[in-house]
Length: 332
Ligand code: NAI
Image (cartoon, rainbow, N blue to C red; front, top):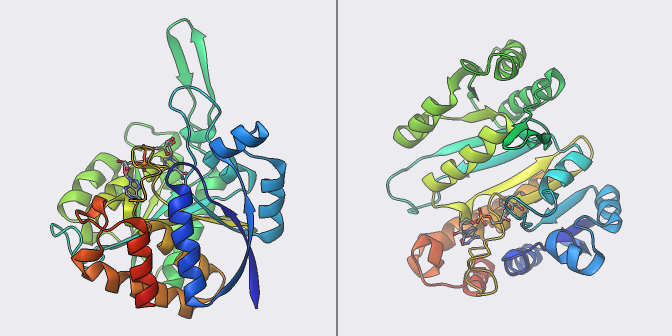
């Protein structure tokens, strides 16, 4: 059987890591018919819009997309296409597994956690305005509906993947209404899952404990902004942004992508680490119920990372994107 999947190569290092990911999927033997579409800077240049209608149509039709990173300019330019995609398809759960991979980052071992980030609201609603010259407001929106949905998803995920604990992370001591609501929803939903431990931590303390004792964390349940920040912190514990994959899950559609951005500082040099994008493909295969192929890819990545000669520059090695890709294909 062949799956039809939308492919958005993305900006910056996107095309380099997408090429590697597609080659690895090809090598693992799952038949995928790629429906190539554009978004972000490439789309602005070619179609004068960051998210063309054809791209939206393609994702709607195929239900599954693999996406490279998309650039969003800081402080100016069009709004984030990533946020727009998540809103358009109501991709309410951003799931980011963070696991120790062999001997990468020797400070920490045995890390195995999953970041469960609410993906549609919070300060990412983009409601900002200048109320007087030199005074701006940015509105944080938290709803019961979205908070309960992500909490339910986190517990269902924990149940399905035999995880033991869900930790809600918040700042409800200060933002008593917004974070208070998020925490209340998490507590309420937790009661329906007596077999799964539930606790909560204030976000600043959670950051400190992630650095001192990360092994205590299992599933982390977070609002959008804390989830974004803690994802990068957690990536740093296991080898960096080059190795952490992610998925954006909705009721109908799902988009798979690495946690990292378009890395403009190294784009076009052929030295980007494709691990995160390849592991995002493994998450996509899980979603398509191609579990065997997903496991094969993860095993190949683990085997390849055992050899320091395969490490890319971000990991302290010298291999380039193509050499890494070839090593994974060989391991498969
Ligand atoms: P970034 O994640 O692109 O890069 C941060 C640092 O990590 C850079 O030094 C970069 O070289 C390195 N890095 C990231 N991925 C790497 C990889 N695969 N291999 C080797 N090194 C890697 O974050 P930054 O610089 O803050 O953002 C750049 C652009 O990406 C911005 O326009 C931002 O809006 C966008 N972005 C897009 C995301 C997405 O499409 N989901 C997520 C995060 C950022």
